[in-house]
Image 1 (cartoon, rainbow, N blue to C red):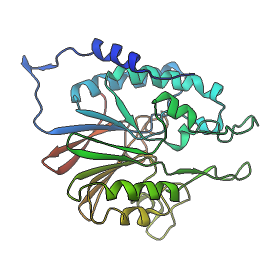
Image 2 (image 1 turned 45 degrees about the horizontal axis):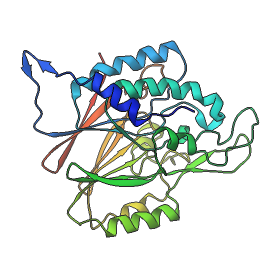
Image 3 (image 1 turned 135 degrees about the vertical axis):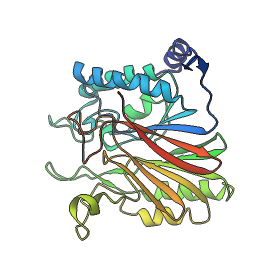
Length: 299
């Protein structure tokens, strides 16, 4: 089983803890900076390993206070058994440890290992187990307070128990998770800045931009009960929503909330750009409570 233990993390972080210098002066940041990367789609190939290594220097130069991952850490786990997906998790694990800093992760649809294996193997009883074991989590949706903000992670990749050839998942926040979210928000001070992470987007212009203004977004590309979810935040300070899944770099401000779809580390699944977005990641910086998103690509 591929996991990322605290011992692994501490060992690697110590090795990468050398000071960072620019022009002979120690680099100091005044703003709070959070790094967000998503859609790695790790595969067991030397080409993917080499492309992932190009991100190491970029991440270390950005020197964020926290690193957030938006899901789809491996490719096609939902169509593989745990044993079949293990080589992909091993490639991601090497990248993960090279970052040298804890990564707080949201679960993506490709991370649901063994949902419907292509070889006919019976589905796993818990397709989220491999993800949770790797990141040492009890469950895929959770929250914590840090850096003066509240971070909330949702899991909207809901499995569809259909036949082969039919959709495997849809985007929806189920009622047990909605009940938990209501409880979390009821205990959160109204003015506290909240950063929400979800792999499948809550709000996106992707359909309008790529299909046309009157075309319906295909199932699974956005959270179908998004308005119900967002209604729970009406009396709260939802500063930003960080999203993945679509592999495009997109920003939308709606009701004073910055919605960011964060591109993809793999770009067009390791074959260049997708809809004009190159492989990359970004930083969400705060000067006070005002968020600013910047997309960056490795050189």
